[in-house]
Amino acid sequence: MSRTPRWGFLAVQDLKRMPWRAAAKVDAAIQRFAETGEGDLRWVSVNGVREFRLYVPPYFAWVSVDEDELLVWRVLRYTH
Image (cartoon, rainbow, N blue to C red):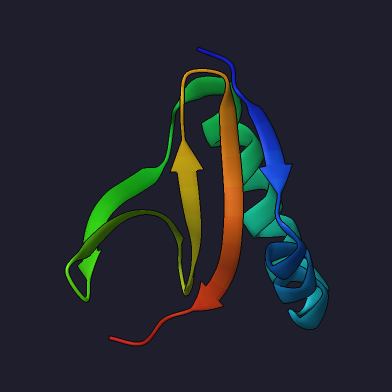
């Protein structure tokens, strides 16, 4: 179940603003999920719209997943 990871413009900008070790951790999690499907992926409802989030504490990646591709829209820090 290998997918090709693709990074949207805003996701790339988000990574550039993060500390490099955190960005590397998020990138590794995206690569692992794209290759194996392993990771903390959850459906979340935001303003009535459902979206996928891949959690890499304390960050999450807002993603779209299909059979061949994993598209990363944003990478954001979350709070509890």
